[in-house]
Length: 292
Image (cartoon, rainbow, N blue to C red; front, side, top):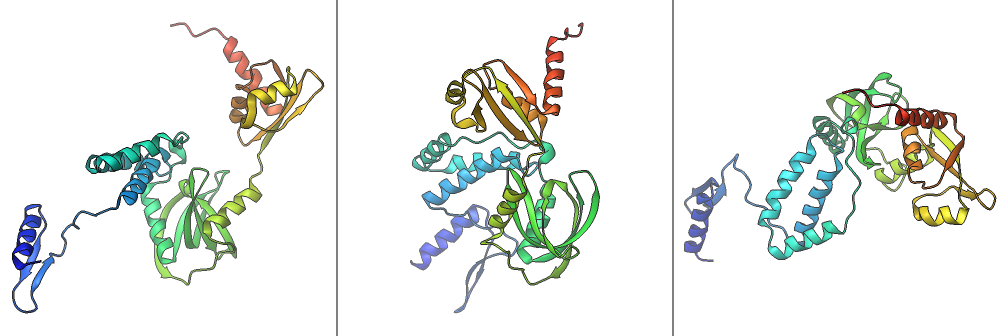
């Protein structure tokens, strides 16, 4: 590359707004001024597809409050500059992916909290924060940050809690006032293959649904199983003309939602909370609409 070509390229970069210093002499050259923005990033086709899909997933997720709007904006700008062949690959891949709906806003993590915890995990730093338990009880925590892990469309902090001498996981949407201590500690080894595996294993052993109920469906087992297919389990025959369905979840509304799949008459024969909820729901359906 000739000096003339280099000067031409430097002039072009300056026209684009990049502040470039020039220094004469045998040890001189060109360099980007301090505080300047980085030049545009260059991606391979595969990297561009991966980035676009990651942004699309972030926009649909909603697990961090306010990030959906930002990722949509970035994705729109990215897709404008993608080559047509790469853009086609992105859109074809997106069309083949079915994602669930976004997290309810009450469950979304605060973006500043997310960023603070991410930095603490990166540096293996002790951090302090207030934490609200499931029953609303507030506690002050001081932990060694290890990793942020997404489970069940929520983010969790995995940390070593020295006050309890054990590993703990904390839902990010229940963490408030995180404060970095700037105390860096040696990173503890997670008792599993990695942090994500450890958190997933803990959830698998502790996730016991709070509510359960048994429903008697007025249809033969084969017919019910053929209709519901792979969407459910817990079906057992109850004589030649009926089927029993055992359902469990933490929320009675979810159990009620499962019943809306049924196209046959049914009776909730076990599960007092679901029986009460179904009765109240039926009363609301039968009630007269309010006068306008």
